[in-house]
Amino acid sequence: MKETKIMLLVVTLICSIASCAQTTAFSKQQLARDVDSFTKKIFESIPAIPSLVISIVDENGPFFIKGYGWADKEAGIKADENTLYYIASCTKSFMGLTAALLDHEKKIFLDRSFKKYLTAIHFKNEIGNNVTNRNLLTHTSGLENNPLVFRMAYSGVIEKKEILNLLSDATVAKKQLGVFDYDNLGYNIYGLELQEHLHVKWQDLLQEKIFTPLGMKHTTAYISHAEKNKWKMAAPYDADGVNGLTKIYLTKKDNTMQSAGGLVTSATDLSKWLQAQINFGKINNKQVFPAEVVKAAQTGFATYDKQSYPFTAGGKYGLGWNVSKYQNQNIIYHFGGYPGFKAHTSFMPDKRIGLVILSNEAGVGAAAGDILAAYIYDRVTGVAGAEEQFLKMLPELENRYAKNMESVQKSFAERAKRTSQLTLPLDSYVGKYHNDWFGDISVGIENNALAIGLGNLHAISTPFTQKESIRVELIPGSGKVVFFKPDDLSQVNMLTYDGNEFKRVK
Image (cartoon, rainbow, N blue to C red; front, side, top):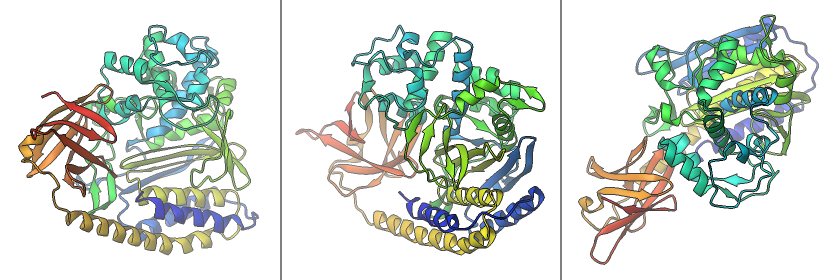
């Protein structure tokens, strides 16, 4: 919600630049100098952006790669091309290529029912046998299982038996098969197929199939591995905190690194990944992946009309890649977002040039990354006057951010005026509450307020406006209301979080 106004600036920018004639050739050396200069101007305009790392890649590798700002401001760690960032849903393109490789190897077929690879799972609800692995990976399965997706991405309550039971009991065929509807579930299910059918973790398969062959030496699906090796990792931030730039408490752990969004990597390693995509599986004169397999992963399957700024055209979704247009050029891309992170990976196959932009701030930092992407691709495609047009947008970006901060501060001030609507002593609400699908919520007392915990998630509450309610941000930037339900004896035996009932068990 808080990002909407800033994102509108990106829309304005795209529309204003699109009318320019494409007449000017570009020089890589000049582009590198201008991108460096333009990025520095962004940081001068909005110093609240913690960091950006940029790589521009062609068939020979990066010809510009540089980090700006702070990977961890409090620790005094600067960002550079080897800093690890969480790339969220950009993971899907890695999973997509792995699925294409397994299909090529005749181990798990893309166009076969996914249920054939999960024979031990007996689905409680009717799930047709015509939902294929390709449907799962192109967001056209029609399936829904919000508790499973939530656990894997946020709470980390993923004990194997519980997750398989949840897959069996909570999966429903809720939408139309074959119609694009982006989510994480298909990739989560495919990851479970690898575990149950091939008896290998998706994390280890990516290491074997992709990271090692490409020489991606600082990429992993295990946070513990990065920590053990003392790799430099970017910390997540929110530029819209009550006191300005604020470090986000919620960090990724092994139990929330999931097959729909579960990699930390660097611009250096992602440059190798894009180089291989541009060259259809070849890097440094070595054919690492079969060309036809890479082409298959980059081929659009499911039609969509969604908008992912700065790429506002519709297109088709392949195996972890969006296949679309930017201006009049073909573009293949995927983004990733999570509290405190935004990752951009894209390439123009006809121009044989690609782009990595990583940020550890998902609001104005993400918007700045989108503007940079549009700036770079307009320069690559020769949009006349692009430099002047984009420079004019920087004061507006600064102004939009300032207005957004005013709105955020007003919201904080209004919430600070609220008084508690709880009718019982705080001790009355303390305990453990259980939901079969989402797990256990713990309620305690911290700083003279109720504190809520759910797996990896934790938040100290603030008052809400309705009786027997509190407001919490278990997921940073996403406030939810918790309602308690005292009985006639003033015993609190139930609470509701995000519409789901949790019964008191302790």
